[in-house]
Length: 113
Image 1 (cartoon, one colour):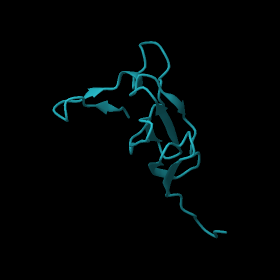
Image 2 (cartoon, rainbow, N blue to C red):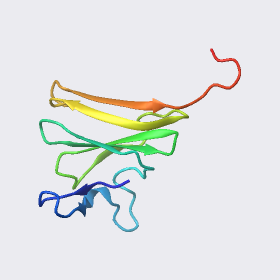
Image 3 (cartoon, rainbow, N blue to C red):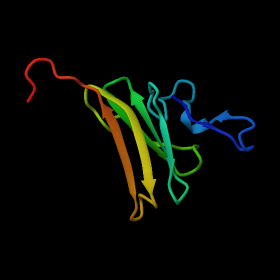
C-alpha cells in the first residue's frame, strides 16, 4: 500500500515520494497488502501501519511529511492477524503514546486451550 498526499485541500493527490522505492533499491516502507491506517502526532510525525498478508503488520514513521521513513516490517507477527488500527496520544516520542491493535482472525480447529 502507498501513502497519497494532497496540498490543495483535497483537489488532487500525489504519491508521497518517500513511500516509493527508487528503481533498483529496497522499498522505504514495507511492501503491504492493504488495510492501511494513518495517524499524526502533535509533533506532526506521520505514522503508517499496513497489513502484510494475514501473517504480519508493518509500522512506519516519517517526521518530514513522508520524504524519509523509518520502518519495521515485523510489528505484529502472528498467523491470522488482520486489519490494523493505529492512534497517537500527544507526542509518542516525548511522553505520549502510540497505540496499535489488530483483528486476530486465527481459528482453533479441534480442542482449543
